[in-house]
View (spheres, rainbow, N blue to C red):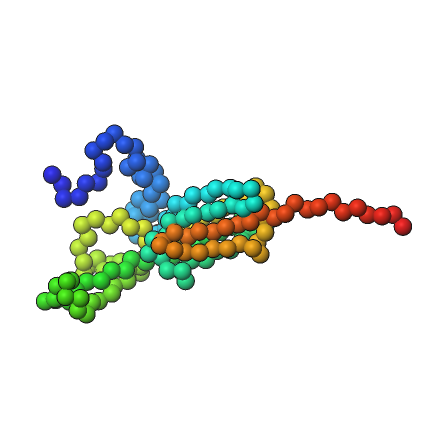
Length: 171
């Protein structure tokens, strides 16, 4: 029996779909010069007055996320994820809560970190991420609201009010 199960025992297709979702990560791992990137998963729903985007960005601080409009109807969410973890110093147990070293791993520090630690499983996405959302109707860019809570980025993009017809009088 394996220490870590990688696939559920049922006839579930979730692992296949995850492989397809992470294709770019697997392809990038072949070349050493490729920048690691991933696409966070989002739920997008429409209400009568707005579009609601809820994305999974666990462990990514707010300052590492940028939200901007690339054109009047296209919202871009991008940023960077780094792997952070704490390890107890030699001779101390994790339960003692003594001094701990925080190690950050980014693309530039991977070789240094791999020499210090032995990963049994590395499933967390690190690197740069980028998602683009194009809306079919005009949106009100000035009233967009975003919040990050418990690793979920919630963005509300209000629809622009329909332009009202204006009657022009002839002089």
